[in-house]
Image (cartoon, chains in turn red, cyan):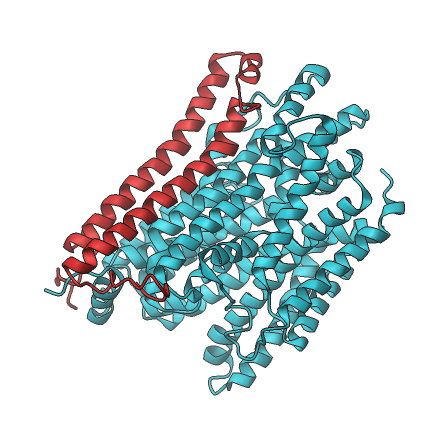
Length: 117
Length: 509
């Protein structure tokens, strides 16, 4: 059994090479933005509910909707789309620069046909 | 509510729509098992996005979500978030890497990554179970619509609906028609949003964006009828809400027909941007779905119709209730019904075909007939499709919840089994076959425990609710996978090298 080959042993917490480290960094940031938005918004809504009266929560409207409906039902799906766009833009830009620097497999981009990267 | 006089036209619209789908699909021919439910035709990133969204849209999205809003108010927002937020997980943690593995199905991926036929077979069995559960939700939606269209009781409607679905798949298959997913998405979004615009315009609300306009109905419900939507956590705890939300997210990133979108796309960049477009197209539906639930409550209140919290069937049909009570023209109600039928048909057909393909690829030639030819596999796929259709029909006769709840159970199972297997398989070199088999079996136990123990151990039902068990279940399964993998032999050097070099693009030392 060979369990000690560090050059082959990669994981999320043990990235190797600049490419993977950069990717893990951006994934961590995106997931942090994802998690904080979900948990934070619900704790905020929960605190609004327990702190203020139902009437106030109903009166707090944004774009015609009660604040909790707008925040969870409208804003967060939009936030997820924004996070996905940010991730893709980063990946594309990083791909373009990395392909000229290290010639790695991942960053061979053929944008015209979109057939490979 | 009387619909009898308006059912002929809706029925004609439904039939016409399906005829259009078949005609548009005739350009492409299905000949091999890989065409039999797993592949598709893509035109650019927006096309991939439309295919992802069309594949995703089901009776749960079209009918079930509005029903949940109607019955449970803010709790249903967990579905909106769960079914959109899961795509972030999918994109950043899995989409690119899945494409790099170059496999064609979830079980293919698991068999290859974990170098184990047993893991592959177990994954195939789990995928088939997920398919069956998810299809029950779709069949329920079909049955309710058939019941409404033909004015027949639920049980005969289940059987008629199942026969219609099988006939549709057989006719499409015989003619060689494949799904035109872009067209299908366009139809779904139009048939969902157009009636909503009409309803909000009729009420004098902001109809150009009915996704915001329906807020006025919430205000009217509260001020005129004393019905409050303003206490989001009055009937559910924060834990229950978050458990459902995260369970659906984990399930989204583990559902076979969602993952299958990434095996077939032509390039990695296309796969990534396709997810963004797909998420946008999906969000368009989810931004709109709450409006139907709210408007149905408003129309019922205005017509002095008492709210019946125990009628799941009525809640699942609330989209059509809102359309009927809101005085929509018959042709528009027909379009809405056609959209719902299309969503349920396409989702269940795709799932059952994918389950059949899984059987014919992963189980039949490995366990039943090792020397099976391509022709035998196609025959086995067709036979298994029919068997699954019968099983799903029987289960749909006595469904255990609303459409969205049944779908959520399938998501929880996917989140407890397939999601951890993919996540650790991609991101941890040390995950091995013993780990993944133990993990998937644990995930199965966690998913079914709350159903089987009948409240004998109340803490099980509280920690692992049937619809939300993956919130705690998925991390638990990952812990099991880590412990078992650490205690057993690591994957081969070739696999570890493949993971480092080809999947994560680490430089050779």
